[in-house]
Image (cartoon, rainbow, N blue to C red; front, side, top):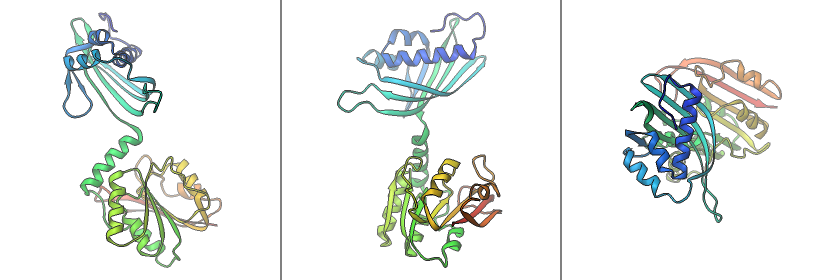
Amino acid sequence: MPATPVALPTEADVIRWSHDAIDAWDRGDAATLGAALSEGSWDWEDGAPDGREAVLAGVAKRKSPVFAKRIWSNEHVQVREPFLIFVGGAKEHEAGNDVHGGYDMDGSYSLVWCREGGAYKIAFWSWHVAGSGATRLSFNEIFRNGTGFSKEPNQLLIDTVAKGKPGAALDVGMGQGRNALYLASRGWRVTGVDLSDEGVRAAREAAVAKHLKLDAVNADVETYDLGVAKWDLVTLIYAPHDRPLLERVKKSMKAGALLVYDSFADEDDSFAAGKLAALFKDGFDVLRDEVVETTPDWKRDRAKVEHFVARKR
């Protein structure tokens, strides 16, 4: 724990102090943690914050460590009086038990340190879900509220399949199912995959209401098995679209299968015009590749949108 400072601490100091405080919380070491907490500190995870005494009382009751293993990543520190700020991602494995084992959690910690009584103490401490769990929570809220996006099928998809013969289709990032249900209504055998529980629930209910067959899968597309030479059509419409996923998509498509990609073209994680064509230059015919300024399906009035369609040879 930090001693009385004679100078502004280094970033390494703040990281070490933060790790030590969190480790003390894990172990149930109320004395060590208490020495690090400000008199007016708050711990905020869910709902209302807990004050210093409530936190220490809970720690003192603990009979065993919470986590058996923690791997830190993406740590950031800001050293600027009057505050020291630590933010770090942590993959954690709970101590658990011999029967079921412990939980695996992907989260992010934020600690704010301030001067108190000649030393630095923790004034604010929070933890929240990170990684795919955070993405799931965000989209659950979006789909639960049902605002900020189009409820109609994507126009590029409509144009692309207008004269095609239906087959097996995979809708990546299906959401509430607007595109998957449209394909099902056109005779396609559709599997839709989405991380959001709320999105998948809404898609399933809509399929039942419209008497349409839809295989709605609640899964993270990063770990979902797309298969090999399985699909006649794959859609990536305002969906995750990093290069590793696109490589998996290419392998999952049958000869003659279509890829329909539609998403923002002016965001950091997007592929601008020409970049997708370069990724699909071997074994594919690019049927459409353009960036247009239009009303997107999601969250904006106007934006640059990438329309891309390719057929596998």
